[in-house]
Length: 55
Image (cartoon, rainbow, N blue to C red; front, side, top):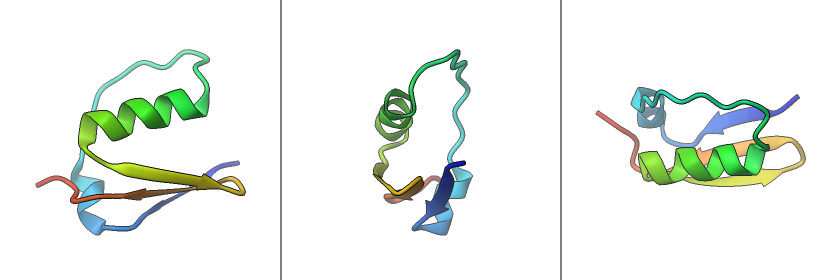
């Protein structure tokens, strides 16, 4: 199981629509981070998303 932590609460306001079918986690995180102008770190099954967030 992967735990996701939002460093900035405004990140919860970001919305994207996408279909992922058996893509690996790193590819999904890359797409999400580029689409929403976020950064991520992955360590020990924990993902931290950081950045300005969305309105």
